[in-house]
Image 1: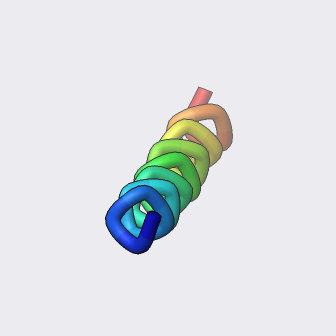
Image 2: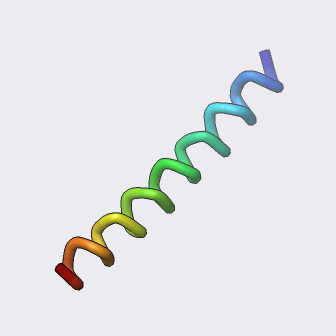
Length: 29
């Protein structure tokens, strides 16, 4: 169960990074 939580946290962090990355690119367009 602990590993699953860690996976979900890292997954959320990845999502946030991807989102901010897309937002930056959208601002450029």
